[in-house]
Image (cartoon, rainbow, N blue to C red; front, top):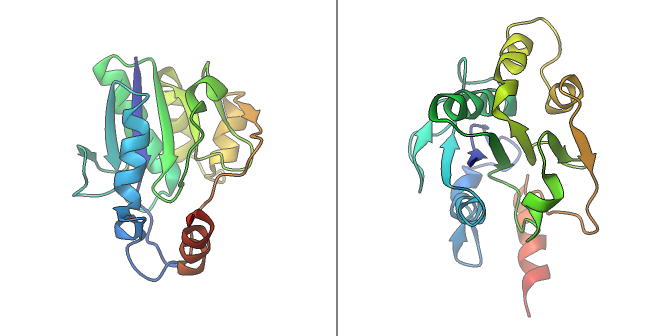
Length: 176
C-alpha cells in the first residue's frame, strides 16, 4: 500500500502569499496535488498545514524543518498505519506525469530535477529521523543519497511554481 503525502509546510516567501491556495485553471494548487496523488494512492495526507482538502499531519519533529520535516511525518504515519511506501510531491508541483508511480517504483526513487517528488520506503523513517537530529545538512538530495534512492529523469519537465510569475507563465502555457 502507498500513502500519498503533499508536502505543504513551506512559508511561500518567494510567492508572496499562501501558494497552496493560489489557483490554476480554477483549482487551488493544494487541491490539484491532493487529487493527483489520490489517483495513485490508497490514502492521501497533507503535511505541514492545519487545514487542507485531505487529512493533515504536522511536520516532524517540528515546523520549519523544510520538506524533510514533512516527509518524516509522512514516513512515521506510514509505519504506524502499515503502508509500504510514501509517494510525495510538493504543493507547488503542478501537472505530474500520468505514469509517476511507475516511473518511481519501486521505492526508493525521486525525480532527479525535483527530489521532493519521490517514492520513499516507510522503513526509511529511522534514517530520516537520524538525519534530522544530526548536524548534517538537511536536504532531500542528501536523504536520497543516504538511502540510495534512484534519480529518475523525466522526458518533460514538471512545472514548479515558486513565484507569481511561474504561475502566470504556466497559466498562459495551458491556454488552448
